[in-house]
Length: 231
Figure 1 (cartoon, rainbow, N blue to C red):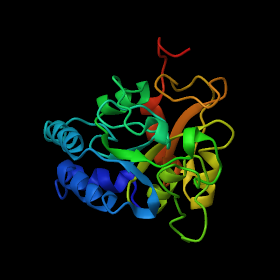
Figure 2 (cartoon, rainbow, N blue to C red):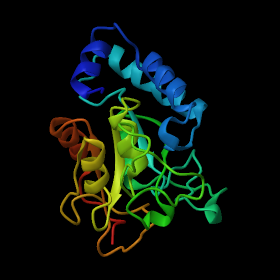
Figure 3 (cartoon, one colour):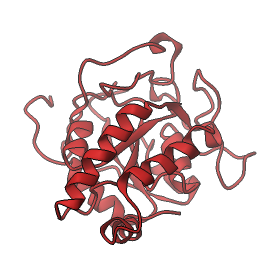
Figure 4 (tube, helix red, strand yellow):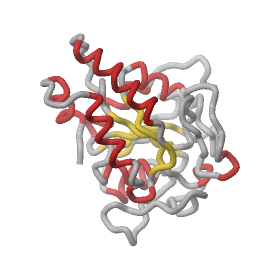
């Protein structure tokens, strides 16, 4: 499993560049490990990585700068299709980024793609995504949990160090537990819901998935904050 502190040391010591890290992550994602990948945009990812690398070389001190992330495909992204795991939205391209996507991009996190989820986040096993089932990286005969199973599986499998998910009634916490990683549903309102394709908007909350609580905290802090657009 990857973690932010280890990657931070490699990036800051110049043993690894943000571009090399992004390329290596994309190489893994192209194999669609665990059936957990729904969308890639190599050009956009590498452009973000180049921007992050410039900031690193300028000495910018930011814990998550240059770190790869994958977003659950229920969270809209401008340069990737957002399907919500459904054929209905197979070719949907959002004209804007969700607030959390924008915040993380501004912090220098490198988006490497979109992760599988139960269709419209309605499920607890990640087995009813319209584009194929997702499996648990520890046992391919087992489910990863849902609906953020793709995000949890990719973190648990060491493909990405951090990911986003959404939780209405356990959709971050359950797959995190079933895949052996750390997931957090923040208090309602702590993180903007603008740009989430809602299951139940009065309960939905975006949150982080990572290999450990420390990394979850770093990611949550970067996503959190008041948003005028959040209802």
